[in-house]
Image (tube, rainbow, N blue to C red; front, side, top):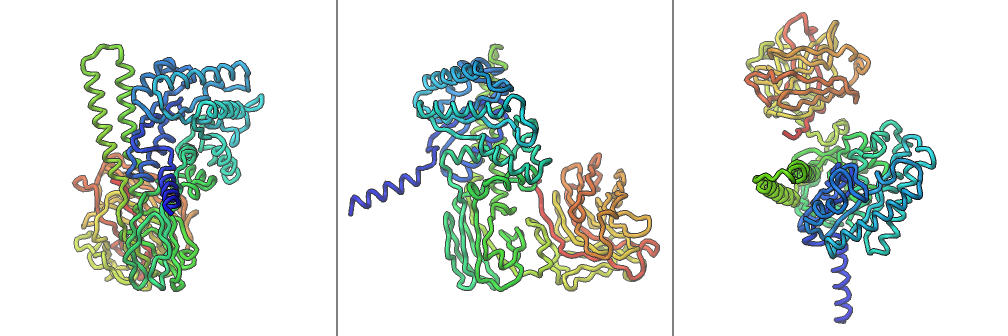
Length: 613
């Protein structure tokens, strides 16, 4: 019995330590310009921080553009290995070289021999400089011959594949790990090119250096080669029984409520993926990234038929049907607070990597021969800043409890985009108030009925504005609108109580214009009008409008029925007293010539998504 128990404990220990990186590891990413981009490397760092929040590992990014197995612009290989790798006392080194070594031409035996000989010598030097270091040799990332015609003489990526085959053979002899960053990217490019050829070309814009979308897939290939877990958390809840049927890598408690609510504390965070970026969304959907590396699943059965708003910490994530919840969804694809927290970890990762790069590339290397007395102290100060950022980065990666809610909502609410939280409840004007100081009037007739907010003049000729009680700085507001012809109104952004604001025009009448930008009682704002608004507009129907304002010098973007129609930037902040925040407001214009008697402006599904400040 003791032997069986010991065996089971050994298996459990192996499972816990299956990931390639260990506590106390110091990882150096070495390579050419693709490593120098600090994209796949920072994605890997963020993945480790978010997926292993208690793992004590350090990272150094040592890529240099143009490098080959003999070195390059940063010095010969012996200098590069000594200064940029061994100096950091690494326990793990990744190496990605080959793109420049093949010389961008068809396969040449002499060039291949030069590369393979140089690679072997480089490995021997590294082992001598840093004994015991675990090396991950990376098969070179691809030269894009999927979205564009292949190079003559057999294509250049075929050369890189041959180089990768050599690396694979050498690794087996030298006891090195291998990660393939070529084949998974090529497969992803093939699927992406079939789905959207124009967008697919943006994944590796110059055929050599991937953008973030390509690097994300490369990072996944590397950590997958290291045995990284793909699971964030799995939760299944039986709504009728009010119990968690399944909870993996998380803790669920306090399941209660007429609809449903619970507290959930995951052990790790998802990998932050910007699905609002076209190439990234295409790359993710053309690969198995989410399924293999970022599973954060939620399944809720037993709900009454209908639509439910999923809110986490009071913020609406999405509106889903009972059937959709019962079939399960991946929270990592939605704008959750957990994803926002992970994005903050990645922001700190990028800052930390940049600080080290400044230390290395702006001070250590260029000033090495200048015999300056302050060089060492400047580098030491940046090392301290690096360490401070790392501490903040690791603290930010610690998961926290979140309050989940499923709230029954009307079917119309399903059109609210994921990540937008309603600010109009559809029943009354709670959270809103009429301005008592607006120059268009102080007695507009605003009502809430059957999910619709309706505004009209009362008495005739007297208008005004309805404002949110809350102020916002950087945000997007979403609304569905259906105004009557002959009525001039507006959607106010960062409004004062008086209605001094940046206004998205809703001037729906002869000679009027919609979706342009106007400074309502703001001095110095040059009005911009959008003349072609009718080609996006649906008469006598509900139209969706999404307006975004951000920046100390405001930039405003507007989308109508999914098409971007406005991309406007001010020359300065013309808000009264330089205000950087304000209320959201909707307007009933005063006067009898600019508002049809008895006319109405209608709004529904008004929701907001706050942006980082």
